[in-house]
Structures are given as C-alpha cells and as structure tokens.
Image (cartoon, rainbow over the protein chains, first blue to last red):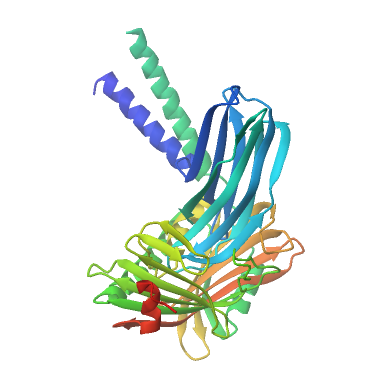
Length: 148
Length: 285
C-alpha cells in the first residue's frame, strides 16, 4: 500500500474513533446571527442527550463568538424541557427567563428521568433566546426534538 | 513533497488521538455494584418472588454481551410472533410514578403522577407502524391527553401541537435492549436474575444500575439522586416484557420506586373502536 493511501486510511480511522467516542454528532439545534450589533456573532443553541438508562438532559445556551464579546443582555426569555411518549407529554418542566448583563455565555441544563415508553420516546427543548446590545435585539424561538 | 509530509504527520497525530479517545472511553473504571441495594430493590419489585435461582453481578464486558445477546434473541422471537400478520396492536400500560411534583401542560392541566397509557398501533404488511393513537388516562379512566400520528405528522390534540416526525416505533422491550448495549459506555453495571413467582411462573429480569458521578437534581424530585436502577422483567418463554421498574436512591440514602410500569393488556385486533378511530380521522367529539 502506498504511503498516501496509508495516510488517508489513518485519517479516516482516527476520525471514526474520535467521533464515535466523544459523542459528537449528538442532536442539537443552533441558530446564528452573524455580525450581531456590528460587533460579534450571536449563537443560540438547544440540545438533548441521554445520560444513562435513568436520565436525560435538556440544555439551552446563548453565547457570542468571533469575537467573544460581552453584550448588553444575554440569556433567554423562557425555556422548557419535556419528555413525550408517542406524542403524549409525560413530563413538562417550564423554566423561568434568565439573563446576564455585560456577559458572553449563559447556559442551563435540566435533568429528567426516562419514563418507560414502548413507542417513540423523545426529549424536547423549547424556548426563546434573548440577545440585546445597543439598539440591536435578537430573540430566536425554536425547538429541538430528539429520541431519548 | 513538504505538503505531503505534513499530511502524513497530521494523519499519525489524528490516529494517536483516536486511539487515546477510544481507550479513555472504553477502558475507564466502572462503579462497583452494590449487591445489598440491588437485592433490596429486587425484593420490593417482586414481592411475589419465592426463590431466586441466579444472581450474578455483572463485572465483565463479555458477560454483558452474552446477556445482551440473550435478551436480543428473546426480543427477536417476540417480534416474530407478535408482528406477524398483525394489522392493529392495542397495548394498555399502568404507570405508577413516585414524584414530589409533576409537570403542567400548557392548558394548565396537571400531568398525573400515575396514569394509564392506551395505545393503538396500526401496522403495514412489513410489520412497521405507520399510524398511531395514544391516549393518556387517569387511574379513574378520565382522558388527560390524546396524540396521533398519521401521514408523517404527529399531533397532540390536547395541547394543540402538530409536528413532523419519523413514523412511530413499537419497541416490545421498551428500548431496554438498546440501553443494555449502551450500559458499558455509560459506566453502568448489569445484573441478570431468574425468579420463580408464587404462582409457579418464571421471570427473567435484567437490571441496569447507573451511579451518578455526583448527586443530581432530577426535576420532580425534592432530594438529589445518587443512583438509579432500571429493571425489566421478561417472560423467558415468550420474550414478552411483563413490567419495568426504576428505583432511585436519593442523597439521604432512601430508596424508592421512581416508576413502576406494568403492561395490562397486549392484543392484536382487527380495528379500534369508532370513538378511538375518530381521533385519527379528526372527527372526535
């Protein structure tokens, strides 16, 4: 086997191993506002992941990047995480709004147990993010739903 | 040539990173199971048990794989028997949950801690579910919520939400086999038990025990939780899941059932009653 092929195989193998074991590729939903307020990139993310057979996590995060920049207000207006079993809401946990002022990174994580479900068991994260800086405001509202 | 050499170095770095990541993830130490706790939980779960034929705490990956294969063949056998020729499958389950608080729907209605789930699965000729009607009821048979899936659209008729999604699944093992397969990656431990009930019936129980790295706040529970055990009881002959329990240990050391789910009925039917079908057809009153 020539060295070029060997290198390619090594890269592919390494990437498979890394991705398989770091849990990358787990479900998340992200929205981006480039050049927010003319100073930074605002990011809004919601994520769901299974912790173990007992529990799963719902996660919300608001932050700035490229460059990391402390903005006037950052957080969320509201968020909720819920568990459904074939469309029936078996757990629903609404959380209050939360913001920080002059900050660049805010997150919250909720933990729920995994109820017995013979059908389609899903974790949901719903909510409305909150970014304000000067006269600019961005409040994206979206939901992520993933099998748990 | 220089570029190619750099690629080669990068490739080897990535390979080393991959191997380290693999080693860290798969060879990390797993918590030692607490036999006393497991046994106590087992006694609570099956007060009808009169004898325990085997009780092997899990320590090795090989052992876990064997149990996983054993359960898998039971599930496959069950699927073959149940799904063959079925057009509709009707399942009713009783869920008994021990929570300090329960969630609230957007309608303001409280989600009951204990509930009955009345589910109607419509299968195609390949045995795949393509339609579904799901009804949550109180223990007094009052309807709390209704959801449906039809033509790729899920609906919760009670809260008035609609969303696109994959067709419903019918997991005869309630996803337990998949959880068992993931147990080692979670650092969880497994246990297998054969029980003989007082009525002479045998059950085969598998348990997944999860220890949290630190006490965790689980919504609905006042105290922090330090561990959870999920135990599934199967009929060793048919492979049917009989019940599924989840036991928590909280920060005070108290052990309690977070949930006990019992399958009340499991039947193949020709057609659901009209009042149930009307939810699917959007003509429910």
